[in-house]
Image (cartoon, rainbow, N blue to C red; front, side):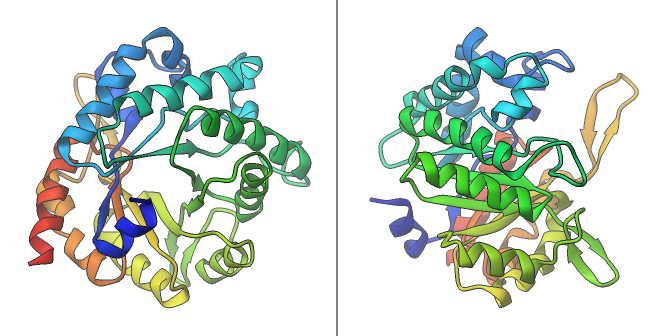
Length: 294
């Protein structure tokens, strides 16, 4: 079965936060999480397995910050192919029969000229290297995610298509303001979807920034703009630092999952978690999704 067959059949469950889990396993602050693909592969596989065990149909590789530009900021640019190849292999080795692995491709953290120092060509090249390695590692699809600039998302899409023939989904990150939902670069939902459709993406969506309550209306707005499969991965609210110095998120599991049926009703096809969510969230989401079918 291909991912598109599963999407037609039922609501597809993605995984939750990778970074949230790595913090639990003791990754030091400021360390590039992709370096753990080579240094602590058993922990990465343990995280993937925990999400599959919780009910995820699709898990994302530990390669969110794995594009060459982002890795270069950690002094790891030359290891881009290696770290992404290993990221893919670890997830694929953890994949049960009938499940899927998506190659995660997050933002560079930089800006395209004139807002930043990089050219579009440099962004395309950086994403192309990453997509090639993830594809060689055996992922089933690519997910360009958490994009805050439509221009960068389109560069990532171009780079991915240059070096991979896999399906490439794209999710953007929106903020709410009185005029509606916009990226930090001022891109509207309709503008983003229109441009992505022109470039033949097979699925679009949104993740990060907003909690599950805020995502409900955004799903509706996106569904009104496109017939494509819709991906939604909300944060577990906003992060704060607890008295013992740990990062905690404001939206607890039961509140978070209470909005899942509304997301499905409004048109979400693939649902997962973003920052602050963990296998416990995914397990409850699996139960709620099953219930919503009845």
